[in-house]
Image (cartoon, rainbow, N blue to C red; front, top):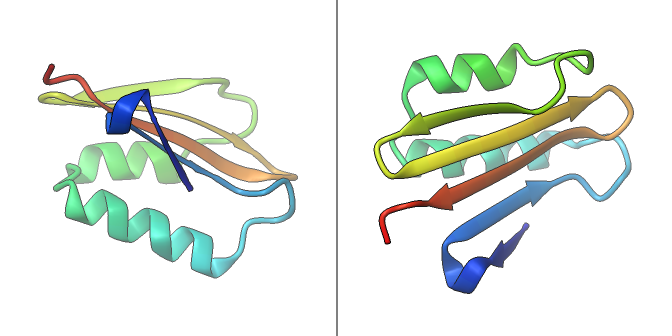
Length: 82
């Protein structure tokens, strides 16, 4: 997990190995803390490796993610309010 864009972007990405349950627990906590709608969480959960980069917005929060069967989920969350 890392921050970018002067604290406006959060990057949640596995380290290149199979993602662990702890990683997905962290993702779930972050999404819950941001009041991410169920529709966005379902889109993230249902993403396959063949879908490419996916995106969704919730107000000023922008989500962008990919999934790979080898490395798991890579998720960028950006605050677009400024």
